[in-house]
Amino acid sequence: MPRPDLVNEPGAPTGGGRDPGLAAVEAGLDALDAPAPASQGRRGWRRTLSAALPPLLALVAFVAVWQALWASALWPEYKLPAPLAVWNVVWEAFREGEALGILWTSVHRAVIGFLVAVVVATPFGLLVARVRPVRSAIGPLVTGLQSLPSVAWVPAAVLWFGLNDAAIYFVVLLGAVPSITNGLVAGIEQIPPILPRVGAALGANRWESARHILLPAALPGYLAGLKQGWAFSWRSLMAAELIAVSPQLGLGLGAFLQHGQALSDMTQVIAAILLILLVGIGVELLAFRPVERRVLRARGLVGVL
Amino acid sequence: MTATLEIAPPQSPASVAVRLTDVHKSFGHGPQAVTALEGVDLRVGLGEFVCLLGASGCGKTTLLNLVAGLDEPSAGDVVTHTARPAVMFQEAALLPWLTAARNVELPLRLAGVRRDRRRAKASELLELVRLREVGDKRPHELSGGMRQRVALARALASTLGAADEDAPGLLLMDEPFAALDAITRDVLQAELLRIWRATGTAVLFVTHDVREAVRLGQRVVLLSSRPGRVVQEWPVDGLRGAEELAAVEEINARLREVISTHAAA
Ligand SMILES: Nc1ncnc2c1ncn2[C@@H]1O[C@H](COP(=O)(O)OP(=O)(O)OP(=O)(O)O)[C@@H](O)[C@H]1O
Ligand SMILES: [Mg+2]
Image (cartoon, rainbow over all chains, first blue to last red):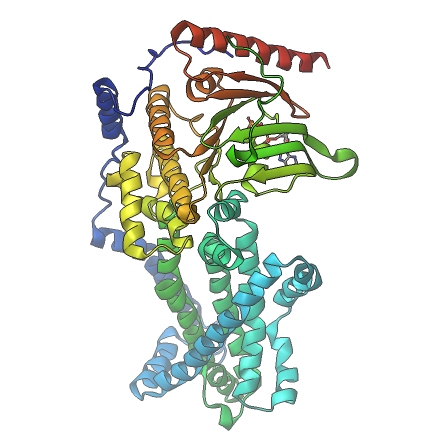
């Protein structure tokens, strides 16, 4: 189909040398192509402030409502303690060094469990995503496992392994592995089909394609899976610690919570819940959020984060 | 002067880069199957520049994928006598998590080239497409034309990566310049011709722009649509001025004819 000749016919590209007119055009194109300098964002502290302010306000409002409800004395003290009373329990626990021990017991378990889950789930996810028979055989099972509350595994784990760390790690793994696997599978499924082709065209074998194309391309989905896997590790751990209480297991946050219930000490129960929440939010904000943000930024996928 | 080539001139097998013999390709099964190619015969000589022309959806990309070895033909033979072909896809298809320079380096890395060598080579290639300054930018920070040029540099790197066996090169390009503004396209066409002359690699270049095909190619091959077949070939090597215009007119007329038979069917 003939095109309108809006542009002058360029010099016929014969010979090896370039003609000066073309060189000038190229230079002009270069100047146009030069990326504009990135505009400076808002100043650092102001950004931090505007990011931190809304959640802080929400927290203040929450405590204020709590305080008001407590002051109205609708419920007896043992059901709804004052915010200050809970704060004192937490503060005492930290001052006596007990809190650090409790946090350490739980957090290090969750982290170890999570890391093992990552090591198990990553090759597993690759297998499910890339090998069709494996996928049709156990793909639905993995998705199903994700919806099974991991607390359901605690009785079985205790019967199989006894009241020890193995039982706890078993529950954590069963909580986290399906999430991470599913995240990786979803991440791989959403890879634009052109990218594996690019890999093949550039001469990547199966392993190199996984290493250089599939895994990096699936990284956003994989990260989402990791984040969810961490959340599941953490809640599975709490479920396990809450139910499987024994001196051999040490005092973790779940056991701390369970003791609160046994002693009918509502302040301790609420303190434990707040600490569990705090760890969850802390890990999300300090570990996952920055990594996710960096990964998405690097690909030009600046979402709402 | 623009005589139709009824039969390809006899060639010794040693001078053939690609040969397709009665190639069929259909997608899907049963009644929903789409026949993209039916009985395609095509030959590209070593070092030859062939332009593949056809309406949208006629199977050009499919054919290129077969030659690249990314798909298997449903029937027929695809034989290449070259190193692993370098492919430039219809979209730039850069890896979004790698910088421009790393994208260019990737084929060299896969070929096992040492790091300092491939760094040097990649910056040489980026220089060639005049993008040395933006080597550390990510694809989303580049304009569409710049991305296309990075893809060109990467395709060239992949010929280098595969070239250590001393086999002749083959460059497959799928409408590489279709999304570019006219001036950038002219510049890159000139660049491509320069590279082709310098390296002696065979090129199979897909386009739906007749003028581009005549300007670049030594031979223009016209595919019909649904199913894709080779309708006609024109030798267009070294045509200038009036001859070139006449060839464009003739091929355009034939292309229109092919498309209108479609409307009638
Ligand atoms: N994976 C696929 N599954 C089903 N049909 C396909 C597939 N790939 C291509 N086709 C069909 O094959 C035909 C040829 O497609 P192809 O992409 O090769 O066309 P093309 O000549 O490259 O078109 P364009 O110029 O628009 O890029 C089209 O009718 C298309 O719908
Ligand atoms: Mg196409």
